[in-house]
Length: 575
Image (cartoon, rainbow, N blue to C red; front, side):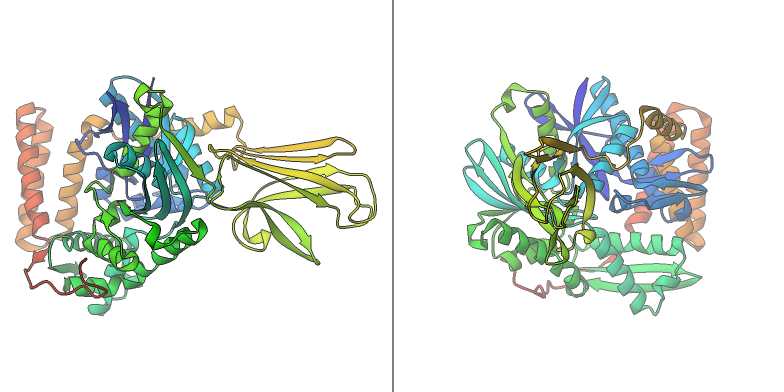
C-alpha cells in the first residue's frame, strides 16, 4: 500500500508521494495539481468536487460551498440543498477525490496519508481533520504543521547550509508563521504563530465591498448568487493585478451595468488592514523565540497569497529582509508532506533527516489563586516536542476528598476562555487545606497525543488521562454507519469530470452574459451537448476543444487591461 502526503487547503488541495528519491506531485483527472476545495450537489444528488463544483458557486450557490476549512472542529453545519454537512464531511469528499486520483496515478490502493494542518489548529480542529480522513477511508497516524512541511521540503531540495529562516505561509484562508533553524541534518522549529481566519479570500471580500461602495451597491443586500459572482470577479481582479498595472472590474446586476477601474495603488489602500494583520504573528514568533529580524537569514514564502507582489513588497517593508520566492508557493506544503510520506515509508535516502516541532498552544490546568480560578501553564506554547513537565498541586479546601484536574489548551488567563480537553479526578485523604497534594505530569508527543498522569504518593492512588485527539468517541459501528451515509452519496465519476466542468463553465458564462454574447454562448453550449450525446469519441474530443477555446476567450474578455506607468508602492520602494 502506498502512503501519500496531502495538503488539505482552504482554497485548493493537492497530494503527492515519494518516488525514486524525490517528492512527486499527483495530478487530478484534469491533469492539474490543484484541486479546488469546493463541494456541491447537483440536481440528482451527485456530489461534485473540485473545479466542477467551483464553476457552480455563482450559478448554484444554494447547492455549493467552499471555505469550510474555517469551520473545522466546530458543530456548525453547511446546507447543500436539503442536506446538512459538517466541515469534516465536506473535507472527506475532497480527501476521497484526492485518494482516487492517487490510486489512478500510482496504480495501487492507497489507505494511509500524511495530512498537513495549519500550525495554529487547536485540538478540536486537528481531531476534525483526522475524522475527515477516516471518513474518506484513509488512516492518518501523523498530522504535520503546514510551515514545518514547507521547511522540510525547502531544506531537502535547496541543499543550503546552516541558516535561520522565517516561513510565511499565507493561503486562501489561514496564515501561519514559523521560525526555523537548520543545521547539519536537523530542522528545528523554534516557534509558531498564526491566524486561522486570515487569507486571500478576505482580500477578495474587501475588493468586492470596495466595488459595492464605489457603485453605491449594498453588499449585504446582494443575492447569494450576486455575492458569489462578485467575489469571483474580485478574485480575478486580484490575480490580474499580480501581472498588470490596472484592471477594470465589471458586473451586470438587475439589468444594470457597474464597473470599477482598479490599479496597484488603490489595491494597496484596500489591502492595508489585511496586510497589517500579518504583523502580529510575525512579531509573536520572534518574541517567543527570543530572536530579532537581524537573526533571520531568509523569508520563505508559502501559500497562494504569497504569489501577490503586494504581499512580497509588504514583507520586505516590514522585515527589511530578502525573501525566498520559489515560484511554487502554493505547492510547497504538499511537496513537504510528500517528503514526510517518504520518511514514513522508511526510504533509505531520507533516514538521516531529523525534524523537531513545537506545541502551538499552551497546555495547562485550572488552579485556585487567591479565590480566583486561573490557568496554570504546564507545557508552554512553542515548547519543543516531545515535552514532559511535572508539578505538585495541593488541596485548597479543608477535608476535601477529591482533587479534580481540568486539562485546557489556550493562552487566556481564565481557563473557561480556553479549550477544555478533558479532566482527571483522584481521591485523597481528608485533611486541612494544603496538607494533601498530588504530582501531575503532562507529556505531549510529536503526534499530538497528550498523557496526563496524576499520582498521590502516600496512598499510591494513580489516575491517567490519554487524549488521542478525539472530540467525540464513536464506536466502530457508529463510524461504519457514518461512512456508509457519506458513501451513499455518489461522487461525480472521474471520467465525466472534464465534461461536467465544461458544461458548468459554459452555464456560468451564459448566466453572466447578455445580448449577442449570450446567444453565441448558447450556440456553443448546444454544440457541446450534441457532441457529448453523439457518443462519438472524435466528435466529443473536437467539441470539447472548441468549447474550451471559446469559453477561455470569453473569460479573457471579462477584464479590460490597461497599461499605465508603475506607481510607487504605498508603503515602500521595491527593495
